[in-house]
Image (cartoon, rainbow, N blue to C red; front, side, top):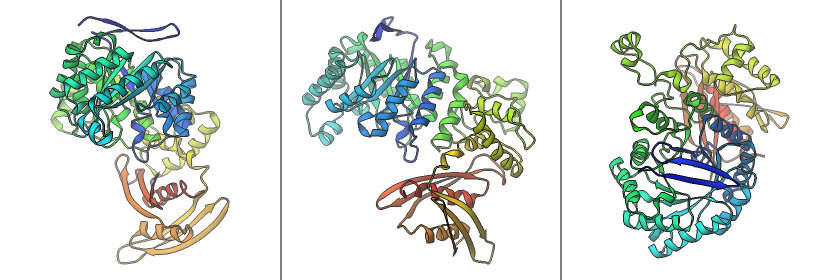
Length: 516
C-alpha cells in the first residue's frame, strides 16, 4: 500500500501522511491517562505537560473531555492557547451537546480535532445502549456529520472494537468515513485482544472497507492483559497509521499503550521503515515530569524509563556491557535522555548545578522559586547521601501545598519495641494553631489518631501505600493515601525522608480536598 492521504485540512493547513512510513503519535495522557484515581492535574500543570508533549514531538494532544466538567473545559481552552504545532483534540460522546461544547472549547486551537464515537460491540449495543446495530450505525453517521459542521478534522472511535464482529465493524468504519471522518479509532477498550487477533482486525478493515484510503486507522489499546504495546505494534504493522498512547503507559485500570515503548520499538526496528516525529531524547524528562505531577511512581522494571531499565547486576551482564554496551543493551540510554555522566548533587552543590539538573528534567524555574527549592534541597542533602532525580522533582513541586488550608506545623513521635507509640501534633488551620496527642498501634496510627482529634470528621483510610523512591535507609519515601469521607474518595500524596511525617502529610493532603 503506497497511498498519500491529506488530512487536517483547516484554514490552509495541510498535513501530508505517507501511509508507508509515517506514524502519527496521538497522546492521551491528559485525557485517558488522567482518569487514574488520584492523578488529576490542575490547568497550570496540564499546560506544563502539553508544552512538554509539543517539545517531545507528538502530533495530536487529546486535551480533555470538555462536557464532563468546567475544569476539563477550561483546560482544553488554555492548552489550545499554549500549544502551537500539535493538533488539539477534544473527546465527546455521540451527543450533539457534547460536540457543541467541544467545539467551543477548541475555539483558540490552531489545529483542532473533535474525537466523537459510540460503542459497537454486542456488549455495548445491547447492555449499554439497549439498541440495535442499525440504530448505532445511524447515530455514528449523525455524530460525524454534526462534528463536521465545526471542524474539518473529525476522529471517530468505535468503542470496544476489540470485541466487535469484524464485518459489522467494517460497516461502521465505511459509513463514518463516507460521512466525513478523517481518522477512525479502533480501540481494544478492555485490553482483551491477542496481538495476532488485533492485527488481523486492522488488516481486515484495510482490505475490506471501501474508501479506507480517505482516512487513517488508529490504534487505542489498553493493558488489562499486558498486551497493549504488542497489540499497537501489530496494528501498525497491518496498516494503522496513528497510535494512541500515554506517557509511562498510565491510564484507567492497567493503563494504556506506552508512548516511550512504541517510539523506541520503531526506532530500534529500522526494518519496519516507520518513522515518528518523536525526539526520543526528551522521553526521560517528560516521564519524570508526568510521574511527579501525577504522583504516579514509575515501576523500577518499566521498559525504557524504569529505574532498572539500564541497570545490570549480573556479573556476566556487567562484564559484557563493559566490553561492548550492545552485548546487553539494545538502546543507548542517551537516546531517551538518560545521561550516564550526570553531575552528582550533594550538600556542596550550588544553585547552578541544581538548575542544570532541573533543566535536564524539563523544569524551568524562575529565580525566586529556584531559591526556595534550593533551600529545601540543602536541607534534604544534609539528611541523604545521594540526591536523585525524583527527589529534585518532588522538591520542585513542593509549593503545591503552600496554599492549603491545613498544614502540618510539627510532629513528634515516641515509639519502640515493648512500648506504646505516642504522637504529639500541631496543625496550622487557616493561620490558627491546634495541638493534640494520642497513643496508637505504631507511630503512624498514633499520629493519625492525634490528627483526628483536631479534624473531627468521619474519615476512613481506604488505601495506604508507601514506596521508596530509590534505595537505602535515608531515601525519600512516597506515600499515597485514599481517604473516604461521606461516600467520596479523596487522594493524598506526600514524600519525605521521615516516612511517618510523609504519612501524616499525605493524610492532610487528602483532607484539604474536602475541608474548605
